[in-house]
Image (cartoon, rainbow, N blue to C red; front, side, top):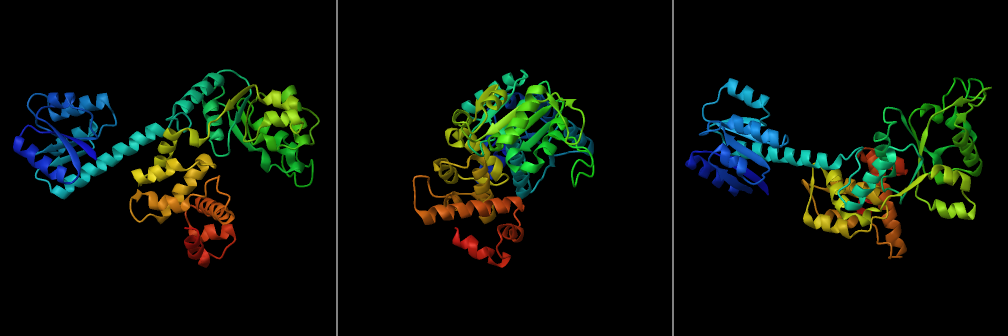
Length: 422
């Protein structure tokens, strides 16, 4: 329900507006003067007359904006002029309405103002540093620790399940470090062909090998003076681990085909969804490299352990649609083994199926895979297929024909598969 403050000294006008707007679902408070309005409880939107006894509506607007720059204020007058409208807009009024005004028009303007207020509130909530959502106490504490670590030029190892937001936290760390003006170079270690490892990391000279038609800097040189983010560092092969360790210990890299090395000043932030300590102990990951990259270990909690973040993320992915309470309850019951990535995909699917501006339980329930305790093969396979279809839709920006091609199915069969997986 939209909370509205009406500031109007003429009682019959205030009563008429209240009756109209409460019949349309608004919760109305009335103040007869600007001074009363400044003492009123917080609201979503303010509708104020321009001409008031004592402090004017324009001065009230200024006071409200000083207190909260995002507060939507609409000014209403029976004898407005262009000059009044221009001044009101310059001071931050969202709209300027002249009496008499059609009931449907004022209802629409007020609802749009409330929607804008909600969007701005959500945007402020989402944008913590680099975009990490931190409504929960655990994530707020984690970001506080990350910002403290950022000031120290030490290597950092981020660990956590797939989809928990390790790359966003790495970005947050870089942006709060003394290296923030330098580059942040992101590397997915699992996507590097073994034959190109040295070329990608350390660069190469023109003609060093077939296909080397130009000089290439390499990721270490690109990150010089900044941060090198190594995502899924546990996927590095044994020989790649040795080469990376040498570069980190010496602070020098030699491009393939070059006769000299160059010094680089790089901070390494790594991420993994594996238990690297266990792999260090069983010998599948080099202990000396582990200690080099894990100067400070930081563990990210899974989404199922921070429901405050789940709610905020769900609203973010659903916007401009809203999630009903029944829909939110279904989301909270799920364990989210795929964490934020899974949540984003599920909501993307629900939005495509929605025929109105709300996402409720009926849209989410068919999209969620079987719980991890359920070993029913058909249910688990169907859940996996749903995730693949959701990911294909995300990559193709919701274009079903393109998503079908990514999945290797005939676009004409999309409706059949969509119905089968509901």
